[in-house]
Length: 568
Image (cartoon, rainbow, N blue to C red):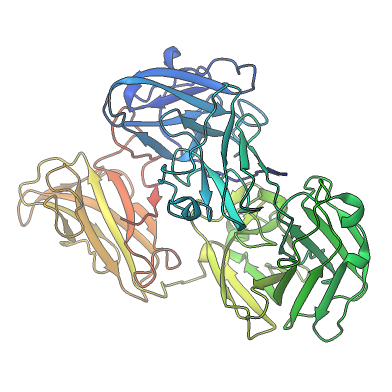
């Protein structure tokens, strides 16, 4: 059995609107009106879940949930969509998190047409497609007794697997901080349970436990702590017997385990203290014997090892520009997608500025796991920084990358806050797709003009609605222009849209207000690493916040746009 409690961080998207009367479901089917009493979520049911049922037609429905009394409390970060095949009742299931009324990133929503699915490496073993969040052919969960515990059970071929629970058939909501491992004996059913009220997942399997990984638990001093991850909960006495663990490799192996401690919250995790710290730049093997699961089944001798290469990264972030604008932060933490980094707000390591030079530093050790008998491969790690446990760099998709090199013992990753240095210029070609909704009829065309070539303030680049030049759907009223800004371009772009009435006349949108601004992103926006450009959705002449526009566009104030990083 395995119980995982998920913790994620969700980006805030502000949508102009009316005052919120209570937690609600808002969408295009009710005018995006959070004050509509018919759309309010009632008190939580006996299971601790909030629900709302609507009569839905067979058209496209776009929605979000709102937890609190303002649009800043909406979730998830992206609008959710569904189209019923026929008119029918649709029920929304909502978890408002630990503190209802306060958006903390622990809120989740899905609707009855897209129940949770078990998504992972088991799908192909059952005839589906692995990690396909849209595959509803094999692992759809159900809640037949209405207790808000969603269940899927099946006999799965013998082997070791990983999975996550996916809501609404997309990855917009992360129900667990990492993939969940499990094993199957190929005879007995494996049962998956998702508890909606608490966002927790349980796996019940009769398979023998296996060793999944053995990452370093770095405590900021020495690399003398390991955390052995099993495929299921293990029995405490056998798990805490030091002699059941053998660590070899490196310059000082074998290594003595001084204490073994079962994790208090996750009984599939055992923490090991080593008498001698491990050294970066070496391969290591952890072998486990004698450990059993809660039913006394001994560890599978064919899957009782974990092999890894130990790599050290010195993270440095230059905060000079941030400090000049905002003052010295109370704290700076690093977050990321690879252990020991997480996206858990202030759960990551804290960086310190010991010599007061505005550059904050911290050391992290990465265990690069590989199949024993093979060798480690390079791994790309995405990471970003957060100050005062509240302010992320840029919007939620912004991030830095570092590639872990299995041929090097260590490296230094030095970046600037938000990847912006004094006088900075982009280091790759950056593609941007400008899209404008609600444009007026312009006799000589609609143009985007700006400060950086190929834009200028004389002619600019024409936006089209004919299916060419980056335009997706001809004749839909959305005018588009795909622009590539070459390497070396100053990254701080100013721009506006111009409605040309002739070769010499026309009008800018909101002429009395400042230009729009966009920071060209040479991390996520490089044309050499993306399948499509950065996509910018704007409304023509949006001088003041508006509501009820009928499109999936959000904007807080003039000149402060939302950059949507997506692949077309």
